Length: 192
Image: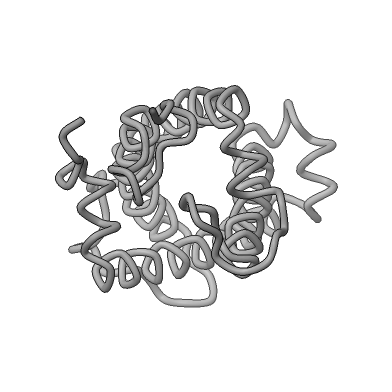
């Protein structure tokens, strides 16, 4: 018999809590990305602007409302996901142990683990730089460590771009592996 903490694609897919956290993150990330582009358009650097057809919020105040709403959803969902990943042992088993190759039972290869750990580090930088530009006075030490407000914006934009590239690659890989995609949608679960 399979427990929820060891359930894998091989025996029906990730547990329901993982799928719910994953898709909540997907929606919240899309909100954060598109509203962030609208915020960027209020004071662009490096590029002229992001096309408004792919932005959310309509204006700086509207975009900030969407961005902060997405931020709180991501924060709450991240706490739930991290708690469940640690409690179930999945964090250690799937992401932290650098075993050899793709293992039976749905474990990740070394490359996958390094990629996901890299994304976690990018997320940490994204959060820290976001805090530095959200509350530059209250968190002035953090803003100074980032090199000032504008540098923190640049770090935030770079991290967002890299996370967006990771997500685009993630989507391409998911679409090229229908079995895994269906498992994340909960559509190929075996009858037990």
